[in-house]
Length: 70
Image 1: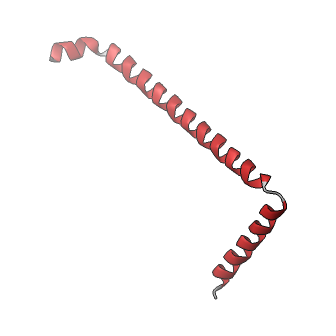
Image 2 (image 1 turned 45 degrees about the horizontal axis):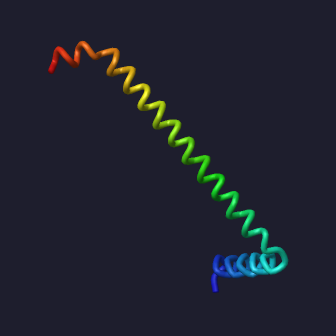
Image 3 (image 1 turned 60 degrees about the vertical axis):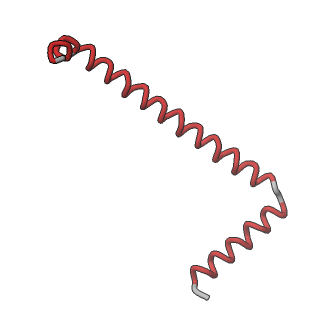
């Protein structure tokens, strides 16, 4: 067994013991993961909105040029 496998087995063992003692750890971890995911999604939405606003400003600025080219 390699050192990495041994470390992994020890880690699994420790986690199992912790969960046996206090299973609320899993709930807290899941809540934390969900909150982080929501935060990332809201950041993405904000960036997308900013990009859309910038694109609209550019198109508005050069509207006459686009119409002349069409």
